[in-house]
Length: 107
Image 1 (cartoon, one colour):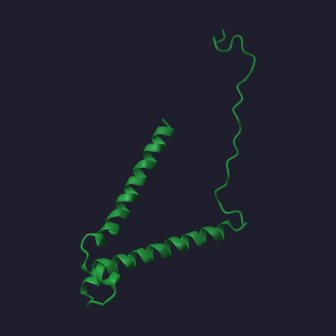
Image 2: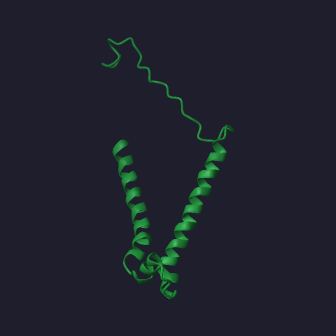
Image 3: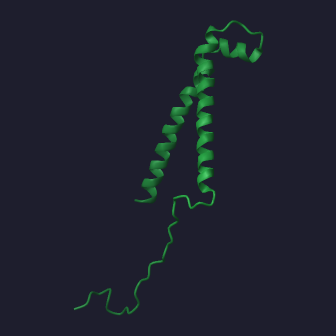
């Protein structure tokens, strides 16, 4: 006995074939560009760390320099904390947004 869906259909459903791209470097310069991007990210993280430490700690102990920007950073107690607090909050927001998008697409 055949199932109702098999009775009048002689065609088989053919799934479209997808070719998955290999994510490994293939020797055409992708590895060097990945290393360059990684080095840029590490350098950017280092600069952000140094600038944050200057704004949060070092500038408070420095004498007045006569430079408007450096003296403003020294006297500031609000904006010097903005970037160090905003970066982790942004990462949490981006991660939660990404997870919710994955749940929506794969539900």
